[in-house]
Image 1 (spheres, rainbow, N blue to C red):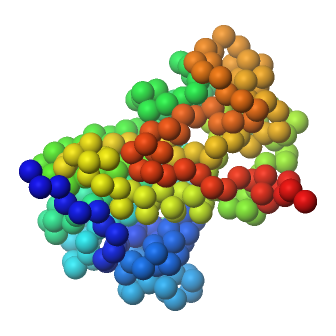
Image 2: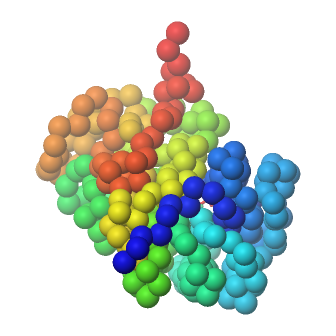
Length: 299
Ligand SMILES: NC(=O)c1ccc[n+]([C@@H]2O[C@H](COP(=O)([O-])OP(=O)(O)OC[C@H]3O[C@@H](n4cnc5c(N)ncnc54)[C@H](O)[C@@H]3O)[C@@H](O)[C@H]2O)c1
């Protein structure tokens, strides 16, 4: 079988473009030369309208609207969802996310889009870790451990993506994002946790800079099908920063807060307790930003 060429240019729909990660992703892809079609149920902010070739107000739970909106696109970066547990009633979170994800994957199939990149979540791996992790660093095999209907919606969508990938021969790349942070978030959220080891134990003190998360979306578009595992592959990879949000050594934190959890390989200093080597290997992506550049810049 001939493998399709990577999507290094063309018209890319970004769903959830009015949201936190969507704004960074629209900017990243437009700067890289893509024609970006911004799709969201909420109006597009000026920064999105300025760089997108089109910005449509779409309810992505409605398949007919999604089929219309993806007309003429080459690929999709699907970020729209209810983005966390506890924002809406449990059942609404599940059914809304699954309806949206089914509609986007189905419409992508209708238009024979060449690549689907979508936002899964670190929550599929057992967050908020009320039950300790099986081991650390947590890797892609620490799955499935959904503990909320939000996480369950992402687990279900990973199965849906694998199925659509098999049906279509088009690769679907799932990005299991850690907690997405802006530089303002660093100022607001991280200092209060430095003396409170329990405050952010729920994801092993992990995070991902929004700029690096956007770059991972682009990496999902340009990755070769060989790297992804062949036509119709559906890899799901962890996207996290290279360090934790803490100033203490990660191995010490783990031993104190999760005594008895096996640390399967050495983690030096404040290194991440998530394994991000799959994203590096498969997507040729690595994080470039740390909160330390904002809060503790070198002189
Ligand atoms: N923020 C995080 O820490 C984090 C971590 C892991 C995964 N994720 C995932 O990343 C994605 C983006 O997250 P975010 O933080 O940017 O969320 P966000 O809430 O800021 O953005 C989501 C966007 O989706 C849109 N949306 C919701 N329902 C819609 C519908 N029916 N039709 C059209 N648009 C709709 C919203 O209007 C919003 O603009 C989500 O899929 C989320 O689950 C986020």
